[in-house]
Amino acid sequence: MDSGKNWLTPADSGVVALPGDGVLACREEVENRSSDVIKCDLSQKDIDLSLEDIKESLKLTDPNKVNVYYLAWSFGSSLDETLLEKWLSETDKLVESGKIEWKTLPEMYNFCYNKLMKIIAGLACGMLQDQLSKKAVGKEY
Image (tube, helix red, strand yellow):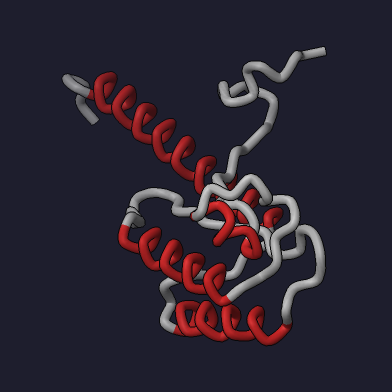
């Protein structure tokens, strides 16, 4: 059995790493470098920091790459529904504007995997076309 020391090293094991930003309710604790990130309660500061993070992430997107940002909100105790509704309302504005899309983790995996397969297929087709072009040079049809 593998020790797990090389879990960041890509392998042919079918693992796809999707970078995340932690837990919505712990955003304030992480910002303050609190040692108490296990007992987080959703606060307005968590909402504000998370929305800032999303907007900063949008500035870094590259249309030629798969851009992923996710965080968990169902980790730990129940969230304050009023605060969660505020966060959902703000993120819905970004969805409606087409800047972000809601995806589950399986949907993100499938999207990333399918995008990767298209890139690989495109590279393979390009290499095949190059090979065919080289063979066709000098031949009459």
